[in-house]
Image (cartoon, rainbow, N blue to C red; front, side, top):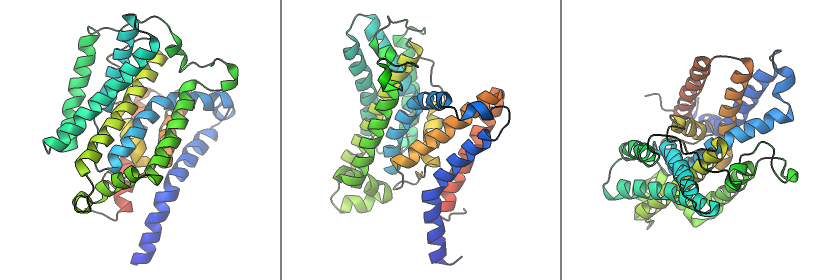
Length: 324
């Protein structure tokens, strides 16, 4: 394949790949006689959207991190810690809004520490966030006394309600928050100086530094924002479960990273989009939903999801024409 055709092929893969993947997954399950009449019903689609909120919020932050050339393995532990902090605060009598702010800021603090360690210690993100994975999870268990925190019910638990109030919302408030934040982040990435700096750092950090971009500061902001998204995802987890559970979201970081890569984000940095990430999130969500409706055991779901992750990473290498 000549260079021009190869460039066009890679460009087409970047743009159309996620859409084709989503259409394939939906079409596959919609064609199965056992669930055909239920799979595309509005109620099921709303259920899939609700189940996507926590992964989607984490993936929005991870999109920033991956575009900047990094990785955050502590995302799932950060979600658990933020949810536990919010539940602990509500249980101790803090106003719900203060508890929500505390949980979100906890996520942001974890992200800030990640960014600070990566830039100051000149450590690779994989190692730093792998360490933070254990620290955040252990801290959550310590605060919760290795138990679930049964906090009193408040309006926070309505954020992920299946039947929202008022009814004109049609979907849970958490879904609307996810949509609004995705739109805001898309605008930030495409039209702001900060967004261009994130792409520049991920594409070629040395060149970005020579161009006057404060790469360390950009990275710290990226990880802090990612942490804030994880903190909000933790609030949604707390809302959904109505308890603060330090053992939730184990392994969720793989779904979050996979969603970004499936959506066209490159683990090499410099590539990715909010729209692609959201499509990646829904591919994973429809896969899980379809497998569950078919009554397939969890190990089948795990095999399929694992295969999708491998395929997504392979597509990433194919897009860059790297066969090594």
